[in-house]
Image (tube, rainbow, N blue to C red; front, side, top):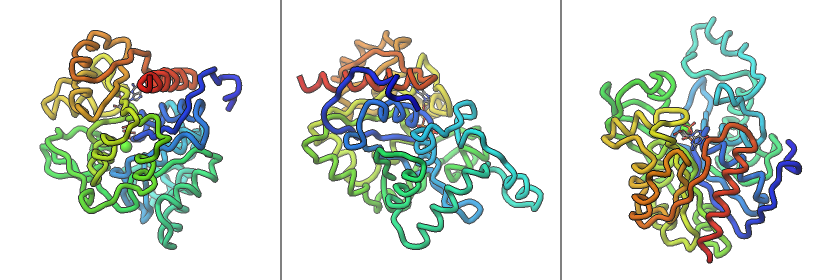
Length: 327
Ligand code: GDP
Ligand code: CA
């Protein structure tokens, strides 16, 4: 990719930690990698979506971020790899195997290598680093925990595993409650804990990811909220809701089902005193006063990321905003 041509004059000093889910988070992370050096940026991804399928360990959010950072993601489909083929899936269908979760032929290699390395005893962080390096990624990408945490969704049809709800049932069941199984005994990735107490940390970014199923699993890990709040770096979220709608996925539908208005303001209220700053889309400028009244500083910017330039522009606006907290 031609970062050199697209690079802006922005020079941000200090380290940045970004909390990310899959697609929305990955888009902003791609903007951040264009502006920040590998020494500066650490991305921590949700692993509450992870599950086993075809006897393979699948980590959808880690993979979405990896593929986006490597510029190998399929922007149109919104998940998986570009120029993908589906011969294995078709063969699996012929054999009567499970086919509700689609795995492309190239994507399969990621899951096979991950599963193999995990079974050989490597940590998920080490495995992620090896796969990311294979894709040419130089920035740090970490799973939120080395231990297994599994998001469970209580719906009008009972408790569902996250991927059953999200992929198999296409987010149609009505959400009543969420539970992150294993989160109470899991440990926040120690590399994240130590970064949170690093004096060089200058910003903590909550990506425009689903607050309930992408960010909350990370926040639910023991000590995570406390460390975020105690950090001297400002915690800044980017709204995943623009003009009352999610750009992609069930965030807005979920908000209504959880008895919240589907607005950018409600997301800010939901994160509450965790936040020092909030990046709001221009379409939602009407909420500036309400959010400021919560004690959260606001930056209004175009937040819809449709191409590399808009990802970089949002990352730059966010980092300029973050730098203003020092002054
Ligand atoms: P998932 O794990 O694949 O569901 O992805 P995330 O949780 O990271 O992202 C889903 C959220 O990203 C949804 O709430 C979307 O509204 C939001 N999102 C996706 N694209 C954009 C975008 O370009 N701008 C903003 N502000 N939010 C986005
Ligand atoms: Ca996800």
